[in-house]
Length: 172
Image (cartoon, rainbow, N blue to C red; front, side, top):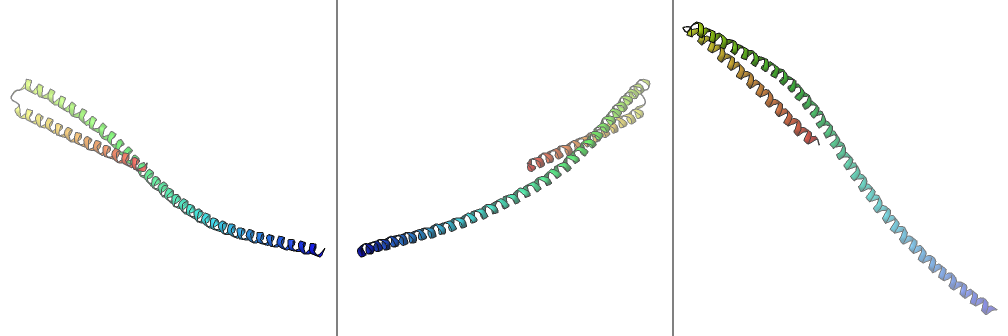
């Protein structure tokens, strides 16, 4: 019986040693997995911090872009308002010039009629004819000035349209 107890004790010792060995191996594995987990957590934290920095940088860029678009939109409103004002002034100038041209035509027609009548009634009134010719020439000069003003106004409108188009392209 003593032998049997010794054998059981020996078997129990061996079993205990095996369990201790397994326990040591498990502890080493747990330590290894724990170290890997900590490294993974650190890597993940770095990646999260990097992504957060990217998000903040992109948000700042987006905010700056929005502010820039708002500024461009405000500039476009001002340019559009200026264009509308110039358009209104151009319409007024055009109406004025058309009225002036009609008046000048009427003056020219009246002067021609008077000239024709003068020619018929008296061929000897060259001085009167000269005065009428000077008046017609003045009317033509005035008409040319009005045409020049109209062309200048049209050029300004075209320039403002071009600036508005460029500004709208830049805002996009």
